[in-house]
Image (cartoon, rainbow, N blue to C red; front, side):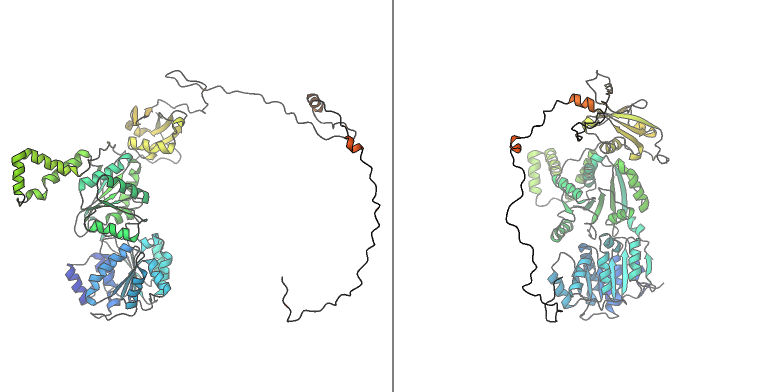
Length: 637
């Protein structure tokens, strides 16, 4: 199918930028079939989708002319999930639509609202912004979308993940119903389909088949490390590859701050991106990466959305992504424009199966292995020293000083000093413990059954504050197995017993020291896991203390309290055990009337003057009842 002819200004801009051919997504949106229709496009990050929707909305923006006159109201709107992505779209549109005289306006959170309002008042053909700030401008009346011909939602799935569904509905509701609506998303979940069905008319679904080609330039590596060596493995990977720019993904903000502090202590030129940073701090961090003052970026998935780092060569997943789409989205930031990239997954033994499922779902093949050790890192750095470009250059003005050094100290001493100076500014490589190879997956078993197993005893119990959730990862890391290879964990007073699946017993041997002071020993047969009774004294050496015998005490017979009620004749009421109770009670003293009471006079009626009888009031007649007039005040309820 023939492509639509691009406008002259756009062809000139693409040629000046060095475009020899269009990417698959750019080619798909300018065909005759897609002309004038609503589009729902699936395209991964780095596939050229920004230029793609810029070309797709060109007929609505340019209107068939090569040079635009000043606009009264915006003709097109682009909505992006983050400030960085909105600013990146603005930079792409500047060179793409610059020859056509298109005026752009940016409306993003964290920037000066008054500056944005003045840009809108001057007139803009295309407005690019984030959902929250765009809705703010619409509600205040500074942004009028009544003449908008096209609306683009970039990274629509991420905007829904960030909770912008209500804002998107408000923005789309403010635009005319006759507009074109283009949605670009890495994935199309049910929420995107629902949004498309509500705000799009007869949308054309485009699934770009260019993701595999994009990720073909990315080498995936999965490194099996012990859980306690995760951070050291990350440091060694950074030293081993020595990438121009690298990004390390962590799961939480706390993990980002922790890794950032550890890297700064080891001399890495690093910056951190998390949700707690202000817009100014984020811009300074990204600028440090672009101009080379920093080489490592530690970020969460949310904070890194929309950022574009030129020359990114290495992506490290310090915490595994939650799904295959996130893995592709993270890794897609490298391996662009024909450059090679590397994506490294740090996989502790407990997450081995999760990593396999994510890689399988992403349809990528990773090379499994161990993290580079201290010797490998040092050997790689020595190779870089031997191939340093400064050694290949001809002597210049410093030749005189070089000759003086050689004459005074000799070549061996000068070369040794050069090597020491080279290593002086770098921290020593990290020593990693030997990570055991991963065990083969266990066969599927019925629900509720564990299968053949062997018991092991650990030298810690309740007295050492041991808990099953604390011991489980340690046991997994020690044998390099997943948690489904561990059955019951029974914590006793001074020791703990744990079940290991029979196919995995050889990984622990007869005895294994998991960490200093924590020993794991194999037990023959099934241990006695009866009810624990505190021991009375110390047991002989080499023997377990015997259980204290249980005491059986007889409960006393029930004897109710005697009744406190007295009959009229002064005798106690007949109740069970009344006689026995009377014998146990001490004798009471007889009741004696106080002397003052006996001297009290008997009651005598009062001899005061007689009261007057009641007489009705006949002096003033009452007024007759009358209805309330209109002028009277209303009664209170």
